[in-house]
Image 1: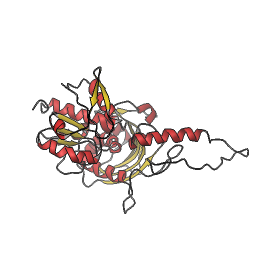
Image 2: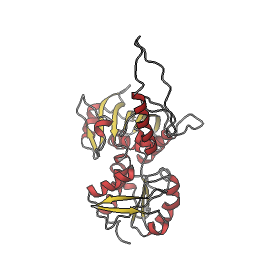
Image 3: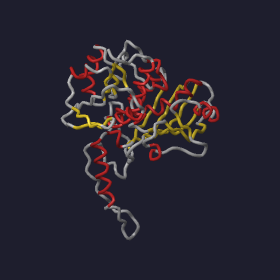
Length: 334
């Protein structure tokens, strides 16, 4: 799904690719539509990838491990969307609106961020820069598409089955319904929510919760930031939402926050009394923010953040990184 979005963005934003070469990292064989042509996607191999100037890796951690380091050593720019290298101290983890300065001409492997963390990284950055965030408490509401195509197919299948069972008994009580089968997700998602995105560690934190905390610290260059996260999967097709409470070293009023966010790149601020939702954010590029309000003390601010997990959370962020390389004249034929 991210790969399709990425190719569409390259065409829509008129990225000056001399030649697009799609590859398949699995068994499937397919074609990619680009600039009016159907381009076959053969199986990926190191030699073919090494002939490119820029490689977008939109695949698994295993594929990233196999190709990314060797390609970068050979001078190929690699933008990897997997989690494999995000926390590697030698690999920049880049959200262009936040830390474009982390890019270096010498470090040709670049990691893209976790799609859940990205929205808060962009929305909270102007506030952190102005008043230094000391703590972030986050509850995420994550779309099924973030778990991949199999999870999305499972959701649609469960939803059809659920619709046929929503009959109420004569006394007004809902009958007990057996949960639909699930395999791609840890629980049935149609008509349901569950607080698990990834496996739990020994302390009870899910993989997603650990990623959000560690990656936010790295992107903001705030190793002392205290982060608490509960990651929740919700029955939404596309668009991750976050409820966040940020505490600051200095006071941060909603009025000042609105002033800062209204001028920030990559953000769309809702008018007072309004707020974004995943449904009206799907397919839109900006990170959207609303419901700014005081927290529990004068140095805490509450906000609501929504972003398209397939766009700014993945494909768009990667294309923006490539555009930065172009503007710096770092990207071109070798």
